Image (cartoon, rainbow, N blue to C red; front, side, top):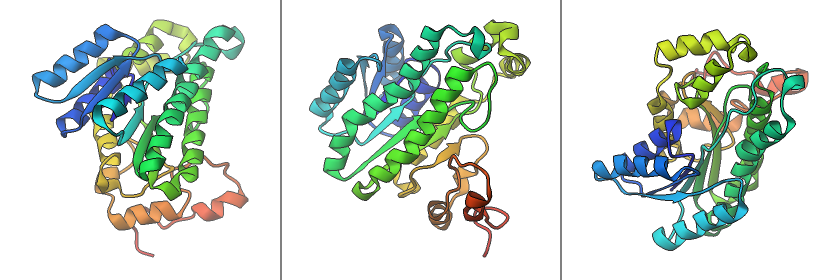
Length: 284
């Protein structure tokens, strides 16, 4: 398995959760020192992991990451695209254009490069799972975070689209919404002060309360990468707000049959397909 952005925060939690379940995990991040810290945490528990400094904005780095993983472990069962940056904070008119573009380059194109490299391998094996980390602004407006929101919304639609392209090859592609987790990104919001708008106070409260646990996100991803999630694909699942822990095989089949947990314009054309009994799992 490959996890990008694995040097700290949510990426580290994901890597350690997967390793604790017996997976051989290749950790990728730009910062070698942080990667080695994650590896040492894994090895101290007797877990298998391998670090490889990787910049997802560099095609040659991504190609080397995938090539090395296949050479060492013979296959890639899963890819978790977690690498991401917050980008410029503040109104669009005040944003630096280069930083805005860089945000899309990391958050969206980084995932594109990784998927382009691993998908031929997965398609050839007719098996594989990919998880893309979504974020705030993917499903609703997020003022003062336009670059981050736009890149994450695009990543969710990319997830849905690629999921359909590879469905016939038994490859599942899903996105995960982690919620506000107390990581360096939360601290960036606080450091931005008034430029973050209404999110500044919310972020300060989260920091005081320790934020949402990255372990919850890691457990959801571990579940999605396991046989328990079946063929569920093309969905955006919230680590905090979806009751994924209790979903049965029947619930998964119902989710697969309707456009729930997906980006949609709400109008008469689409709302009919979304009408459902009171909740997933309710009797019809």
